[in-house]
Amino acid sequence: MALIKFAGVEENVVTREEFPIEKAQDVLKNETVAVLGYGIQGPGQALNLQDNGINVIVGQRKNSKSWDKAVQDGFIPGETLFELEEAAQRGTILCYLLSDAAQIEFWPTLEKHLTPGKTLYFSHGFGITYNHQTNIVPSKEVDVVLVAPKGSGTSLRRLFVEGKGLNSSYAIHQDASGNAKDKVIALGIAVGSGYLFETNFKKEVYSDLVGERGSLMGAIQGLFAAQFEVLRAQGHSPSEAFNETVEELTQSLMPLVAENGMDWMYANCSTTAQRGALDWWKKFYDATKPVFEELYQSVKEGTESQKSISSNSKENYREGLNKELEELRNSELWQAGKVVRSLRPDREYEYEK
Image (tube, rainbow, N blue to C red; front, side):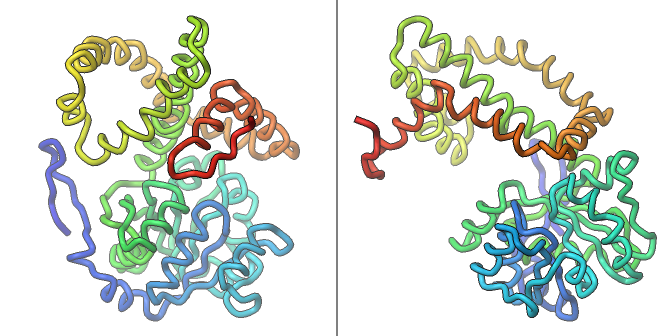
């Protein structure tokens, strides 16, 4: 493990150089990794583990799209693909990758098969951190660990196939075996992590929930919508408003920020853009910081987790979700974006004439 300074603060980081895949294979050679849930994270993690030579089985409900996807991906019913309970019984490391609501529902069944010596693996700290709401309290006789890739399962798989990696956090909640650290790092490397940084379950879920509601999705959609609507109200066309709000950011500027940082991008844009950005960023900071503070407190107090549990447990949850997504999809902002994307040089022209 390496100590690396991030903005002057030392953190423990594990890289593939010091913990190569061969070492991960050796640590996991006698394990059966059961990936329970083949939805968001399941496919990427299961396929990467399998390609890295780890003994993997998948647990998924039959007669579902996810079951069919697992079959299409090469998992064989009765050999490497089973119903959830049978996979939980067969596995020695149980990767609990169901949705948060489904984890709560399935927990009484899973708990029966979480026998002494097994390992319970999460990619999200939700169930353990909010156990007063989820009732997920593992036996003290099992290891409880976490590997949380910092991106979608689709990105995890794509970057693995490209020979790259997606950075992940890792945490140990319980070390019953005395070997939890080697196991969690081995699993992190084997699922395709570029490097692993140390955290705990609580910090992982707090930062994750804030990020999803904040700069990763909620806040950025709010900013997009606000700027787009102001431009439209002032007479700008939908294409111009979308290009100046979304397209230039996502296609031109953010890749440069990802590669070199915001300071580099500021230094390499026009002097007019520099002046405007330097003048206005603190105003946006002042306007949004109180919102982020309110958001963090809501996450910390368990308000956001309870909202999620209550909403996702409703029988008509999917119907309500689809209505909200439809509202986004049909907004002028994203209808304009659909056409703009079709006009990118690398795409066939599929716009409506």
